[in-house]
Length: 161
Image 1 (spheres, one colour):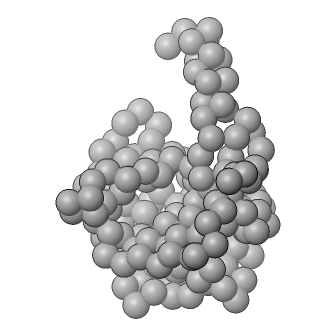
Image 2 (image 1 turned 45 degrees about the vertical axis):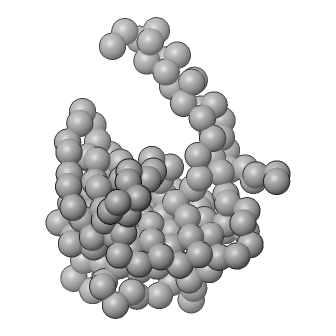
Image 3 (image 1 turned 180 degrees about the vertical axis):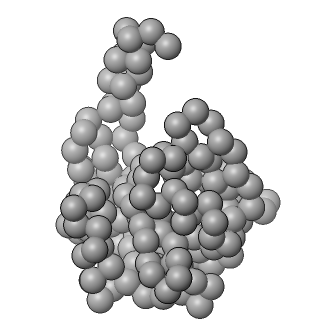
């Protein structure tokens, strides 16, 4: 890819609003997670979604080894959680919040998230710098107050309904 196309693509993606999510797993009784925007639905039959994670991300080896992972879609009032999971220097403090609960299938789930999804890993595809992980949704929790945290133009934003 030419430098010009790469720079233009980077600017284009900064203009693509995306919900902020926490992807998490448990490995050896230790919760691990990262903030991510590359999450989307794949199918309703079966219910499934995909997450794209950079191979250099701290979560990557644990995610591809886990049978189950969770996706906590953040609410606008959870910007501090997004910042915490975006800062590598704060990795040891990420799950200190009392709102994290261990799901019976293993991965931690943020109890008051906009949406909480538990997925069983179904497929993986390596592509360039990332791995695409497809999960079959096995449990869902939905918060009634709809106001997701967004990431747009390099900053956290809120939706205005």
